[in-house]
Length: 82
Image 1 (cartoon, one colour):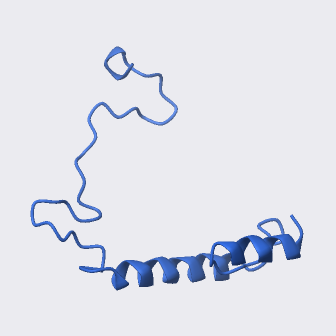
Image 2 (cartoon, helix red, strand yellow; image 1 turned 90 degrees about the vertical axis):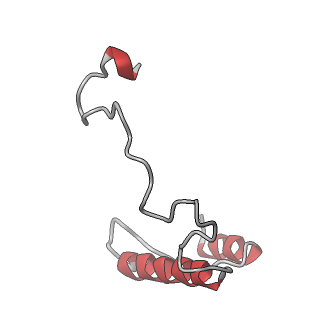
């Protein structure tokens, strides 16, 4: 993708355009920080923002149910997991 194509794509979706290179470690931290800040601002701007559930019976971010039968990374699945 060219620089101009990236700018056009970002513009179409009202997104910031950030040119990065993981290989050259160029602007990677800046892109991560920019995206994180934008996501947090959008969440905070929503009614009941801050990532908190507006429904008192709903679960807030980071308070999900524990997964059962979780496979250990690199291990073969058990019969119960299949």
